[in-house]
Structures are given as structure tokens and as C-alpha cells.
Length: 335
Ligand SMILES: [Mn+2]
Picture 1 (spheres, rainbow, N blue to C red):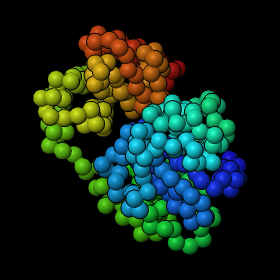
Picture 2 (picture 1 turned 45 degrees about the vertical axis):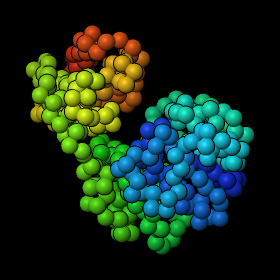
Picture 3 (picture 1 turned 90 degrees about the horizontal axis):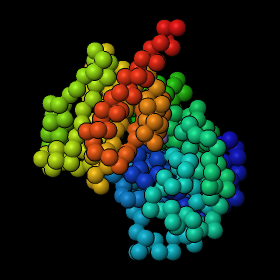
């Protein structure tokens, strides 16, 4: 797959790199590392993100390469610029958010580079996907490392390492393979600082976020003898703490810390008043099967859904579905 991808890159001179909207450390890290590689190969590369580059990822952009999408400003003619448009860390064109309209208008060759479990991607001229990879940065690492004999550029090493950290939950999740650890070791040997990376990515809470966590944890709910634990946050809770939707990031990890919990849940209200759930499974329970019942999805161990209905009724529906799923998956384990 990577040989095909390399041939694809060889055929193009002006490559536009984009990732899913609300970019994460893996999408941004893979974009920056690939941009460094393309630029050093004599190509032009640009990175455009939407709606913005998250504050905690800014340290990765030490070269100032990342552009925030401005449809009516700097990017009015963006469709005409690239001869290749690459979507990184997603394999569904709509996931690029506001950039999708430009994507539809471009005459560039359009491709995706991704590691998510999906059917064959649609809406691309070429697709480069490997669901066995733990991160998009792993794919970029595998592409560039054999082609750069000695030292990696610092910006590239830092971006790759941050991406691996992001998508493995700081090397805690089940995708923390031996291969990922070897790559991380190589990047640390190249001068990447693990503690500084962790601090920059994660130790960034505001007082409002911590107050929100406290308020949410005060309402912790336990079901099925503690196998399902969840919290819920309304727009009024956010307002009372001076917190924003972004402050909900990682909050679902808190009930997951409970001993004996199988499924952790975070219910919240979106800005437009819809109800949202994020579910995390320890190991056995397929939360993707639950979220699909509500029009959502994700992975077996991490999934979510959004519906246009009041939060309270949604909570009881999801709760019932989770308890059924816990029962089903336990039966399978002990059969
Ligand atoms: Mn990823």
C-alpha cells in the first residue's frame, strides 16, 4: 500500500494536505510530517485545517505551515491550487467539514490516507488505507523512515511522536503494538522529549474545565452493579462553569477509571440542543453496536451518537441498550 502511496506522491508537485474537521494530534502530526517530507523532496505542500488548529497542537507547527481555512479570504481560490488533494486520518470526504465544498470543486487528484476500520472509501480517485495501523502517523513513519537514512528533521520527529501518543492514548490502548513502541523509541532517540510532549498535549486544562469535571463527577450514575457508569452535562452545566464544548474532551475517561466498570458513558447537549453520547468499553462490550442503534458509530471500544431529542429520554434509551449489550457480550465470553 505504501509503495502505491509513494507512487501517487511522485506523480504530483503541489500537494494539499487536509484532515478531518476538529483535527486531532494524529491528523495534524501526520500532515506536518508528510509536509516536511514533501518539501524536502522538492515539492510544494500546504496544510489547511478547519475550523481551527486546537491550542494544544500549536507547538507542533513550529514552521508555521498550518493555514486555518478562510473560505471568503485567503482560500477563495484554494480549489485551483493543488494537483493532489490528500485527506489524512479520515476516509469519508464529508469528514473534512467546511473544506468539503472546495474539495468538490477541485480538479486535483483526490486521495485519502487512513487507518480507520471502514468499508472501501468512496469519493476519492485513490485510497490508501490500512486498518492494521495504529495511527496515520504510523503510516507516514513507515513511508518516510526507510527513505531518510540518518537524522529526521526535528519538526517531523516531533509531529510523528505526538501522533503516536494521541492515537494510542499515550501508549495505553490496545493498539499500542510492539511496532509503535519501536517507532517511538526511534523518535525519542532522535531528540523528541516525551514528558514535554505529554505536557504540551494534555496538561492544558483551564479552571473552567476542572470545575466542569467536578460538577459532572458529582452526578456520577452507576448501573448494573457498577458495570455501566455514566455522567451527563447540560448546556446549563457548561454555562455555570464558564466552560465550552471543547472542555468535554476526555471527560468520558473519568468514569472509565472505576474498578469493575465495563462501559463508561458521557451524555451531553450540543450547541444546537441535540443530545449526544460518547461510550467507552473496557474490553468485552461492543459499544459500537449500541451507538449504531442511534445512528452513530465508531469503533468497538469507542463510539458515539447524536440525536435530535431531549437529553433525558435519550439517556434512558441508551442506558437500556447498554445493559442489553453488556448481557449479550458476557454471554458470548462465557459460552
Ligand atoms: Mn488517527
